Amino acid sequence: MAKIRIKNMMFYGFHGVYEYEREQGQKFYVDIEVETKNDNVAESDDLKDGVDTASVYDIVRDVTENKRFQMLSALGAHIGDRMLAKYSHFKSVTTTIRKPSVPISGPLDFVEVEITRYAKD
Image (cartoon, rainbow, N blue to C red):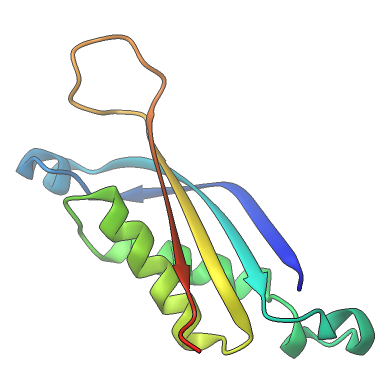
């Protein structure tokens, strides 16, 4: 098994419980951790056995920028499900999403959600 992480990708999306959040949009910061079912890439040195980070980035960008969710957990689950559907050698995808502008009346850096999706065997 291999783990690959992509950290702190920034996208402008339209997610939130309140309608104005889904209309005005804001920045979201996303981390992805992919775990493969094996470590064949160590022997083959072939991209098809590993993780195409540019393709993973494109999936995260597409979902974050072109879909709208009320809950960050739903956004993260959708990202993970899309990756697992595309890559049969992925065992799991963990998506962490940070939302810095939240409708909470108090000082904070961000709200963070982490969700892991697993391949069906």
